[in-house]
Length: 163
Image 1: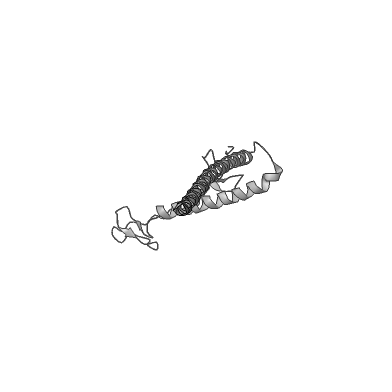
Image 2 (image 1 turned 60 degrees about the vertical axis):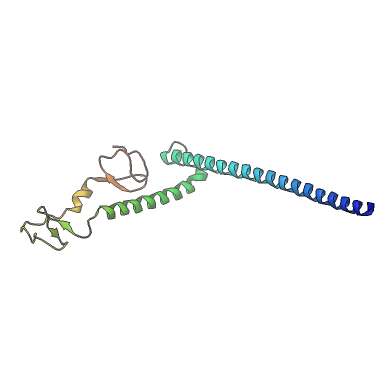
């Protein structure tokens, strides 16, 4: 009987030891998870700070307030990307603003691009002259984008226009 009690007692002791070990492993895993989370959050905040710093340096270099020859190539690359983004956005805006391949006469009748006179009222079709629009533009010295002559800043690169 005492032999049975000692075997049961030994078994219970082993089970308690296993539970204690499992509990410690779980606690250690939780602590490691919290530390990894803190590290990840700190890395994300660090990346945000680096991006903000980079934006600030880029803006200062673009404005000519600081000159760092080692970063000039990076700035030129970013400006090229800015220009592509600007041109694509301008194209999208123009596509959204365009009527679906048909314009309308003053009387409201639809017109085809080849029409010289309105089929409804007989009025001569006025085609906007693209050269008059471009006559009032100038070229940005920084990014070479064509901008309206009354603009104080370039819409593409943000450069202040000297009049």
